[in-house]
Length: 194
Image (tube, rainbow, N blue to C red):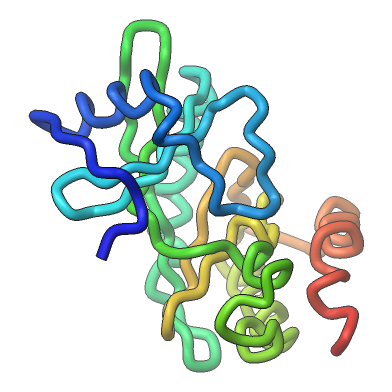
């Protein structure tokens, strides 16, 4: 069952370009995104829902490269009852524009928390799972600075990770001041009841 308006097109590239030519494909499922610049679209193509984001060329290629590296290091790892999946974008070029396209995996943890969707945040994502994910990132040499509630999607027994613009790969990783600030600002509200 699709949540998005369907686009009829020859391929995903054409569908993405058509989505950006119409207001009916505006994306409004994420409570944390107010898309004033209209850089996001949500559409269905051949029975699959997609989210597309307009990005500049450098950012788009960097994110795709980082996602591929991240996937090699972390994808398939297990934490508690979950398996981690890294969502690698499909890049669609249109002249000077570049679109970052991914299949829709569900609502973000941030939206889940703010909307009180289906389940409580404790069932959705416990602090022990957060700590376990951090240990996996550190053990695999990944500084994932975009590890934010809006970039985590939980569906059944899968944790999907998205948005890899701010990722650094090193042999040794420590819990540094950027991570600490990230958690103080972006994760504390999720666990304020814990």
